[in-house]
Length: 427
Image 1 (cartoon, rainbow, N blue to C red):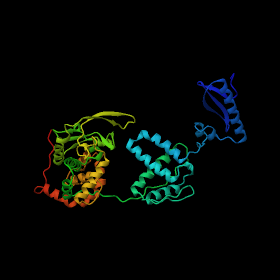
Image 2: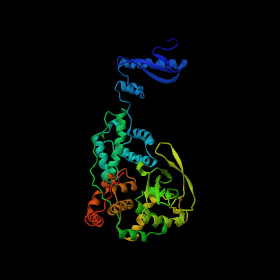
Image 3: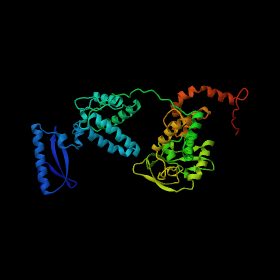
Image 4: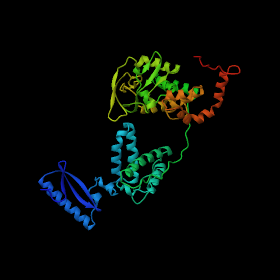
């Protein structure tokens, strides 16, 4: 090829070189414009590569770290640190996750990377390092090793939380293995820690009435009354607007969630998009709230959809507005999920009810519905579960413990010797 040094070619307007490696001709694109000066430099590079191959000093991965030929010759890409892997993986993972989920992943990976050692090479992480990571997360104490620094004691995490951390870190190292940074993930033989299943702790009827009596204002009372009697997720209540409520048939259409402040998304799962049929107490709560917010200001908000980068615009007159009950009058136009725990804990203390997490409002609805004889499929649909299997899984033990209630339901509905049964209609 006239005008080109040996082994230098023009490929689509840029230069590439070819040389013989392990008996095979290979080509490597240099990505530089084809000019006389660049041809000369490319020829010198090619000559140095050939000399390194001849003398046995050629490091393919170091010379061409992004080359697709590395896989052809089963050569591992150049080393990468744990911190570099974390940044790369989190950047690519962002497209698969909601903002809320991505922020949690960042937290898990940052802590896990700090414990393993962000400056360590990924291929130096061993199975023992992973077990030490898990132990430190669980106990709260740093397991000191050759590559780790001493840390002060701190409170350990629950088994459930540790399993979440390890699962997230495993995903990152599986990514490293799939892309050739390591031959095998050190997390491959690590099994989840065994954990005892926590049972729901619903409020009793007496506790429910005491709770509502101690609510500091009517709006907070309406909010929690609706939560107890619909099983709605707290983020769904934050995002609830009067435009979602059918006040003729008394149903709520769930199409939004608020997992983090000022960032609206669709419900947690696809099955979360649902229509809730309201019970009498829930209707009473909404009727009481009408006077406060139904004629309030309508806001245009962006809902960030599951497809990365897509949004929709919703018009919302929010049902619960914290500004109305804020002492300084500077509250926002809608509640944030974090504010639920604050009001919940305050009311529990004032009413003398034993402490439990605020999410028990959702469990209370499910347990009450089951004890009232509701069909588990109906409950699952009301709460936004994919199937009734979730209801059996979460509330199975509670259902067994309340067999006496179920027998009372059966006895109440078995009129005479047998209950009334529907008959198939003749065509």
